[in-house]
Length: 329
DNA sequence: AACAAAAGCAACCGCCGGACG
DNA sequence: GCGTCCGGCGGTTGCTTTTGT
Image (cartoon, rainbow, N blue to C red; front, side, top):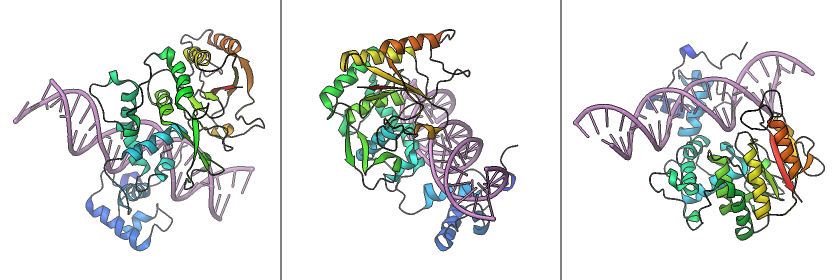
């Protein structure tokens, strides 16, 4: 048996709000407040609406100081940077942009900003050029060759980033996002690196290189993953890890980084909190297993047997939602 | 001018987690 | 400890507007 609905859907009005409804809701909240109970509010305000609908209407449209209209380049930059750091946590991103709502930012990202980034990464997919944030315009376009992506990423590391991991720290003291903070420090990306990160994040391109600090490289799909001790903050996009990820990663390592890398393989459950279960060594998730490159390849091939799409499989459900590779010294 | 396709955006849905009894 | 309620959130839907042919 499912959860009881929050309101009687038959007697509740749906769809766009009329100006009369807006003014009723606004007047009521301005004079009485929300009363800490959105469910009871519509009846008190004389509205035939679901409480959730009232809340959404107020938060996204009626409350004071809501900013509508074009997003500035600076707002673009903040959204991109935070998306690269924390993924689609729109409420946290919205908290960094006064006057903007999570819904606004989400819509903006899905309809415009993502396409801007895509156009930068892969301009041939666009029929016409798009205006980009000015901060991005001088950056060279990354290679379109998938096999060289990691190499490119490595060269970006070497030439454009301030430290080998490609990240720098900046203070965002007002950030309410505790998960992002580490001693009042918030992980932010170098914008040139962001390109590559976002390529993996937002595009259908197969690679998802997501460099994080301390020379970790992570793949996988845990969009919520970020360690509370700041040892790792990751972004990623839900998909399975494919063999080409590993070969790409291998190329990246051999061309842009160090020889004889080692990996730590970890896979977790659907319980996001498990990823926050920090280990004494600073890693998190299930107890990591150590592999060299050959070991990783063997693991892939063994797990690919009987699996037509060559994806790694670790469980009976043929899903690999929470797998990550760590590259470390 | 008419139509179709694409883009934009407000609103809905359903899941999750915290608060509380 | 358990169940229920409610707010918050992210993903998705579907209507409206804009753009292209």
